[in-house]
Image (cartoon, rainbow, N blue to C red; front, side, top):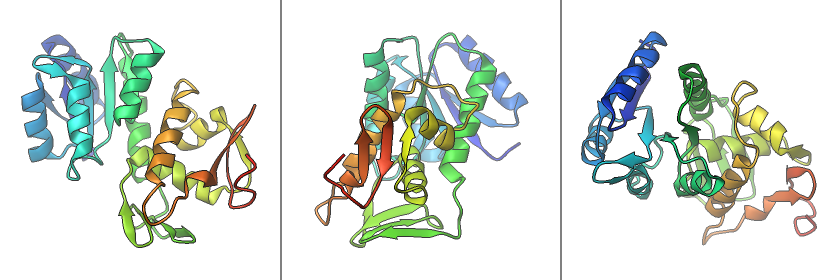
Length: 236
């Protein structure tokens, strides 16, 4: 086993069986839940590395469980991939804005899901552990995988952490959405380019604290994408 534990949350046994077989063939350890209550208990007790969360579940939606996870300090950092048959852009953005790190629409190829899981694991733990990056009171500590402003911890998910780490190590240059996706998610993962906008909004919100507001370091470059800059902060 790879040591990475995946929780599969889906009410359809056939889908759980298919996912479990595909994941175990790729050396992942799997645990399963068919409803929100069992899923939350397993998340708290087992602390999986990633949760694969179906949108529609008995007793409520996966979105409700996602909101509950992101409200708790003990579970907010667990990456979540939404499994959904809802393909409209509004549904996708809703899931991302609540806190999902990725999404995949049914039906999907197991190989695509495995690629997304591996990319998410890399994003959650692939930074240089020896580095600490800072701008003013904004500090990104790679060793502890924490961000702080004015000495106070800033809560953000693994995707937002890696976005910030990428921007802080690549300042003063405009990147297209496609380039950001390739650098942060990986070139072999296929996502809608507009997905980056949701994560940028989440990152900007996290950087707005009572101590200081660093959200405007991430500038929108019209017609291109984004730039991280400490200069001309009001000109973008």
